[in-house]
Amino acid sequence: MHIAAFCPPYASHLRAFSALAEALAARGHRVTFVLPQGRGPDTDHPGVEVHHLDLGATGGGDQLRAIASSAARTDLLCRAAGRLPDVDAILGDQTEPAAGLIAAHRGLPLIGVACALPLDPAPGVPLPFLGWPYDPGPRGLRRNAGGDRVADWILRRHNAVIRDWSARFGLPLRERMTDCLSDLLTLSQTLPGFDFPRPPGPIVETGPLRRAVRQPFPADIHPDPDRPFVYLSLGTVQGHRVRMLRLLSEACRRAGAQVLVCHAGGLSPRAAAALNATWVRDFVPQEAVLDRADLCITHAGLNTAMEALMRGVPMLAVPIAFDQPGVAARLDHHGVALRQNRRTLTVDGAERQIRRLLHDPAFRTRARAFGPGPGTAAAVDRIEAALSQAQGLVAAQ
Image 1: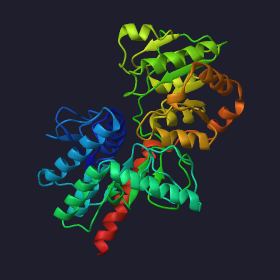
Image 2: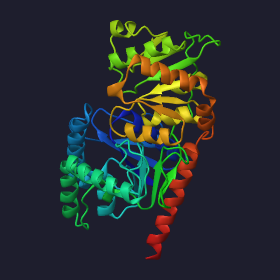
Image 3: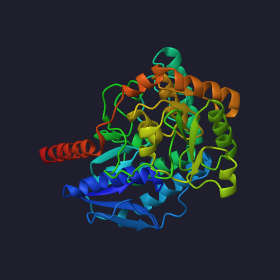
Image 4: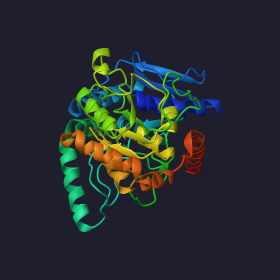
């Protein structure tokens, strides 16, 4: 089967899609990524190809700039629909509505992938980028409806593109991103039970989608086994926040912990040295580090949060943008982390939270209850079953 893969050209999304593509190709399928010029998947498997399009800037920066560039990318993908290869199905990131629009236009089955928190609406579940708690009661429903109205205003440019192309493709009216989601199958990188409660639907929680390649713990880092070892990372986009990293490093030092800071290339050597952390690196094999960590201090990015939970590592969550407030709310809901507003972050406050997380075993006990997720192989099983079901429905018509 030939499958087209639509995902934003960001490292974390490409990593998950590359794992799926490689596993699908290993089972005899052919996968073609649709990406901007200069971007490619993280695999060289011969069954994985790239169809490049001139999609302009790839976004990044703050949330509003990212929204604007995402709307433009959706428009360009839909304009290029007639030039895309002939495929049997589409594997689409939930944040790229062009996948759903083009799948409907071509009459193809759509498999969704939620690299961030799932976008699917559900009673009592707030939007992913809001740090609100789960509340299915009347007050929570009113609150969430207000959040939806604000989101529609913020996303009005993207919504206009979706409305325009649903009309051009001759589809029933689609007005927002959630109208372009799969009703067949959506793979979520959340661990089973991590998301807020939802009614039965197409979402399957697989945990992180990764290739079966593991790197060893850094040979030049030697944690003292008699002192707590803390891993501090703000992800691949926010590693430039030197003040926040310096403050959190100092809080770790005061709490008697040794801290490894990973800034993902966001700091100059001079700024990195000024953090006064035990170790500072641009990149580290995160999973190997989390295998040894007593605590993870994170921006509440979904990838880091899930990789920590898989290993039973409690967290101090300091969300910054995108779906991070929603991830932090779920970590707090499960009692596996403490949540801290970045705008009120202080050394003294962070030190108290770090000490509590290190010395209260309940956080680690609750984190250990999650364990590893089904993973990539199980996700591919689900994809094949869903596509077989879709083919059967078409044949029966």
